[in-house]
Image 1 (tube, rainbow, N blue to C red):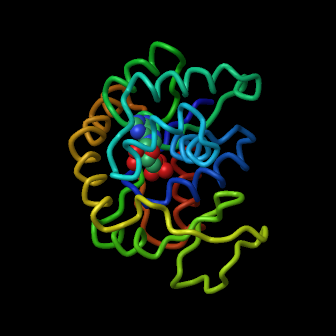
Image 2 (tube, rainbow, N blue to C red; image 1 turned 135 degrees about the horizontal axis):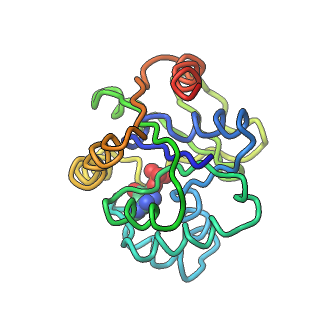
Length: 204
Ligand code: AMP
């Protein structure tokens, strides 16, 4: 099963992706994580991505499409995968449809005020990528021992750019996927467990 997770920054896509992938035993493909990993390893892809990502801009379509095509060809994706953060533009969605059958698209909806609170309090483990929020997690290290950091694009200024990009470039995908009944809309308000229950029900 090939699942796409849609939703604005900090809607909870990463957290829900882990839960869905555990329950369906499919790999979690987060384009944002792949890019951040490449930036920290200073690869050529990372150098290109850093020109866009820290400002909150989208990486060019041809760059990210090549990354996803390559990742979906890996043997662990033979029985499906969950794409988190891809597609984000109509062109990406169209190219994905040419490449593979997308079965379900889960769109997580959260109000703007809550997104801002989540983004400014978000900390990410440098080691394993787990997300925490400072309102509920007060340790300075992750459970795995890695240090916690604020993402460079988790500032209010970069968030404004990311939300603007989301409205202009990604929101039209709702209509694209609603057209042939692939779209599932789920409220992202509540605990991660509550949101996951809604997703499980919708997928069943
Ligand atoms: P995320 O971790 O999903 O919030 O992604 C972080 C950043 O990576 C985004 O703000 C973009 O700069 C870049 N990025 C991730 N996925 C894509 C994509 N599908 N298309 C273009 N840029 C992307």
